[in-house]
Every structure is written in structure tokens, then in C-alpha cells.
Length: 125
Image 1: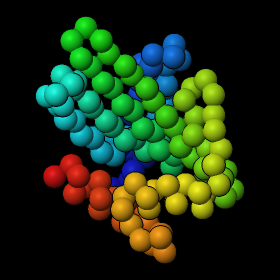
Image 2 (image 1 turned 45 degrees about the vertical axis):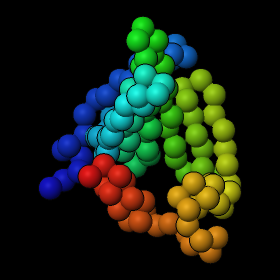
Image 3 (image 1 turned 90 degrees about the vertical axis):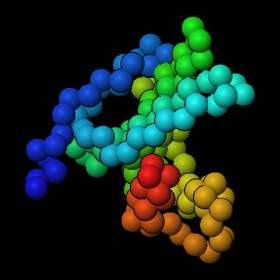
Image 4 (image 1 turned 135 degrees about the vertical axis):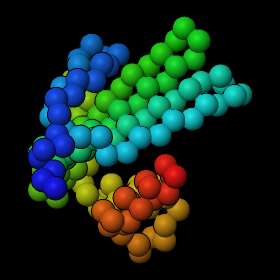
């Protein structure tokens, strides 16, 4: 099946006033409720037609709600994270160091895309 056929126009609302519009597809999603905080959190990960990733997180608690989207893409060996208004660039090695720390991987382990996909599938199962 051609991946381009599954792409659709998506527009994500954000609290920073900048809607995030792109052509892509939903890759993964999950949600959970924190009883102690009374907060529902929903996360979605999209892949764009340009093979970029868009991470969307919505938290709601009673009348309060927050909505944030972040596009991640590579520019050479630098990972760029853009929220629709500002962007931050991070060396890929530093990003992988952070991912290893957050995932509890050994310092020598470099997570591959398939490894990250398996972690997402396991988290969403």
C-alpha cells in the first residue's frame, strides 16, 4: 500500500495561537487519566508527507485545557524542534543521549527507529 494514499490534511489547535497545519497520518496515540491530579492527557504522534514527526499533547482538567504541538525534523545532523512560533536545534547525539536517559537504555545503546516504534507499540498495547 502506498503511504502517500493514507496522508490527509490535518490542523491541530494550539494555545500559542498558531494552528499547526500539515499533510500527514496518525502514527500512534495514547491517553491516560491521573486520578490524583484529575487530569486527562492525550498524546498523538503524526508522520508528515515529508517524513517529519509531529507530536501533539492535550491535557484537560475540569474547565482548564492545554494544547501543544511540536514538529521534529532533521537538518543535517541537527534535530530541529518547532512549535509553530519558535524553534530549537539540538545536535542529534545530544538528542539520543536524552532519549537513552528517558528510556532507561544503557549509555552505549543508540535506539533505532524500529526500536522506538516497538516501544511505542508496547506503550499503546
